[in-house]
Image 1 (tube, rainbow, N blue to C red):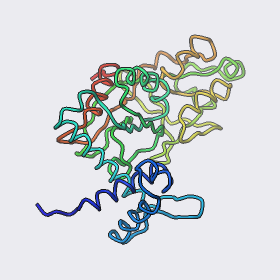
Image 2 (cartoon, one colour):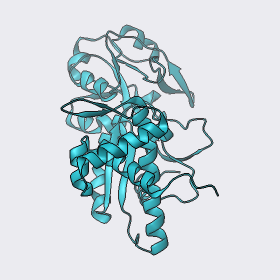
Image 3 (tube, helix red, strand yellow):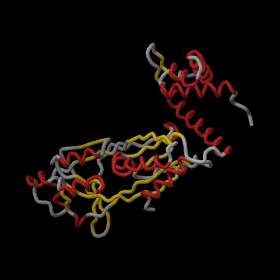
Image 4 (cartoon, helix red, strand yellow):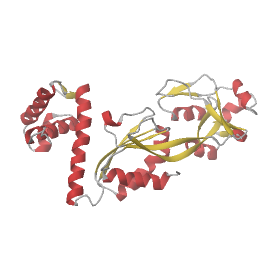
Length: 304
């Protein structure tokens, strides 16, 4: 096997990653017990080797360039895998340890996963967790995530997909809206109502509402004076304020339903669901922290 890296180059990569994490050559130097000049030389050595600028430098701060951000994510993941390999071979990794990066949609994060994370870290305190809440898809390779939770499995054979839950959808509105709104008895009556919309970030299209009709799921296109994007929890907030009807996950509004802030509507057409799926890359040697977290998630939320 051809040798591509010497000890100096590997050390330079470590110092580069440290500077990127801490946002400062000085802070990286203090953490590594070297001089700021040594960190600067290491970064310059990498930039010369790669032929690109990794940082934008000013008198007050450093900032990763686009190329630097891509290189940093790849190098951080590679260094983490080297540490995991050493721990596994030497037997030091008796317990999961290191940084775990997870991306998930906002509703699943707030109402499902985030409440469980303290329990996970109580069991495995050496694991640090970096949580990314977004309804947009992420790129595992470029952004360095270990796991993602999404509503659908992408057409990517390099990803393992495990269903966590089929989340029930429910149609709701606030009593204040219903007092002034027309009667709602059939799906056709939705045309006369203010239906709060959500725009899918990945496509820019509004999500149709789904109902059970004669035992089958049917998509209904609705319309209204409000449309939200990015944060899907915004539609429930608008509904509680009396803005109109909304279809959302039952787990998002179950407390508001119990307290009477919202009222469930058209239950005879209810029962449709949307999945939440746990995604992670195929890996011959999956790190112990990732394997442990996957088992934890499936145990507490798995329905498949």
